[in-house]
Image 1 (tube, rainbow, N blue to C red):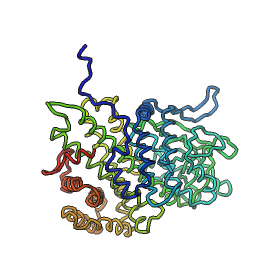
Image 2: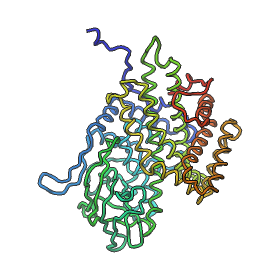
Image 3: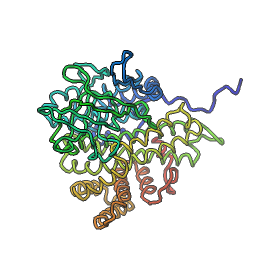
Image 4: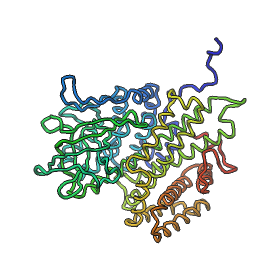
Length: 537
């Protein structure tokens, strides 16, 4: 029947080099790391752009992890079974250094290359990025403790992936367990108890409300020791090869992030090693938290790229009312606006990643302390609305599970919630401004690099500085924390774009974002070169 002939539908978006296709990402890598990593990143781009990888991404999200608490004879198992597609995805990501590549091969720009690898993988399948991120974030904590580092660092830096829990593994994935049901973000309210049993060893007893990637080889965990809240390294296997006393009580039924298992766990005298000093648990684990916040920014940015790319692909191949969708002025503006958000997030992500390199100066370290929280708040919050707008570009197709934007729409909110939701992050920014003035000095120095480039941006930066002064004298400043973090985020994004992006991009971003009108997508200033911006999508 003629009605069965398919016309005016976009072909599958496969067989691409996703690194080559992402102009803003390539430009940022060239700015912050130089050309040396191009071959490696093109290799990853081809891999994640292949139809085989995309099929695995779909399957990993549809065939969800299954918890097996006991074997058929009644023995305690506490194991999570994943589909082989998930193992193929995470195995490829580790082989390409998306976890600890910047520590394995350090140097100027190494963190930028690792961030790019992470984003390319997370763009297509985001669930596996959770254990990849936590493994990356555990390295600087473990590295500070010689005895633990001798045992664990070779495994953390390995590019191998060994999913089975068995003695003698050459590689390791790390997880983290901080929150409890009575406290949530207030980790100091935790009631898990750590009892000293000799040396640096303790026995942990308690319940954790969220433990993501419970099949990891080890976890950094907070528990109440005699000296106060402390940080511990909790392995899943004991030195004799037996299982530690960790019980996986259930897997969380989440809105998104379906490929990744998140769980509730209980410790019944589980053996663990003290990391750092008793009573300094938050200070010890904060480096891991900070780096997982960085990866939340990267993950949200990767999601924006997927959403923008899928929307742009669709509207370039579909026609309506006598013209291709991309040539309809309203659609051109929407795609351009989606790309603006993606460009700003990409520029911020790579600039932030560069501040985590081993050659970071004291000023760079101060910059990243504030900039990580600011970017985590803003970019992660922009993700869900951005994903919806991209979904709408595909019409009814976008709302079906045959296309990836439904998955992406469900995925984006988790980045804003994990590792500190909006209010937690906004209050962290206020604390940084009051307790660590060097962090704002470094942040302000970054803004000053674009002074004079655009009068609208200059005015926004001036207002932001005035707002900081106002809040320092305002007893009710907590209530305005979101206002301040928004202003800081837009200031740094505008500053980065006006220095490095094409003039059409910088002009449209500043004109649309700094007006304070809370605009919806597709509402750009008159005179915007929407076609040239959309072409970059």
